[in-house]
Image (cartoon, rainbow, N blue to C red):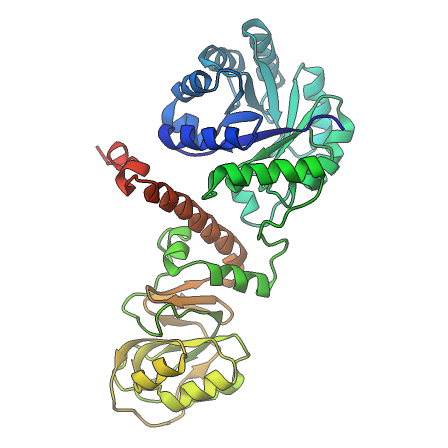
Length: 430
């Protein structure tokens, strides 16, 4: 079999972290080093110079994503030390032609990225005629978050051209062999390496999966139905989700009444009621399905609408937990039984079941709009609500946040500090 090239995409924003991870990836057997677009935008072409100095024998890829001034950008990247420069396939033919001429003059090669190109096989053949050295099938990070994969396009393009085809887009030890089977000559790996706590070991695992053509389990989900979304959300914390949602979705003023490390994940069954009226609240227990979360809008009322007996009823039916923008009682008993509960107030006195209110309607809880079917996640940090239509994307993005934090945590444990790892002084607003 022809040698399959592995390439790590260093999509970071700080030089010191990129160089450290690059070194560990090289130790794991990676072939090519890519200065990713975020890294080049953050650190400029100086990162290419530093990669070239530190790894003089390695192929350095500059992912400029050039759309204009192809000749000039290839020139400056090549002079900085790049072996390959990435140009976007949606750019004008003249941009690609100038990039190719410049690469020939200064001693580099051109990779054409077909992201956002409608007819990829056709454009790949056109770029090959224009002198491109490589074609790249690239599913963006943002597209990956909503389930995008590169394999169908990869197969079609690899049959259409004679030049080597690279593939990027969520590749890991489980999918790398599939990439090769579908025609990839260059396998580009990003987060599966750069977010790993042990980069060298993760790289070795991916290299092994390619050399043996046997997938190695990565722990990633192959599809996203409700159960996969639930499992993904069970892995992450509410702060991970809040970061993934850019602080949206976080309920305010809702306190956790749960055991240490307790967790609640499920889809919302919503209830609107009045202060102290617990009729619709307990009726919702009979409507809810196993795994659901009851979300109750009591308009911040201070008379308890929930207690131990309602919690036992919910626990026996397999309900995942309850969130109340109002009051709860029997807190000790609820915590002891391990039923996750979250509320604005706690008060011994309960109201009466008057039967006012509605079930299964849009409500407000903790300052957030909640619709039936929205995903609710609660832990010791609080509660977040995820709109049902965004659940797959937010689950993916929260996992991404968690993995990035795991890598930062590992660097801190090796003797660094948070301010040094993320270079906080550099990023302070001036």
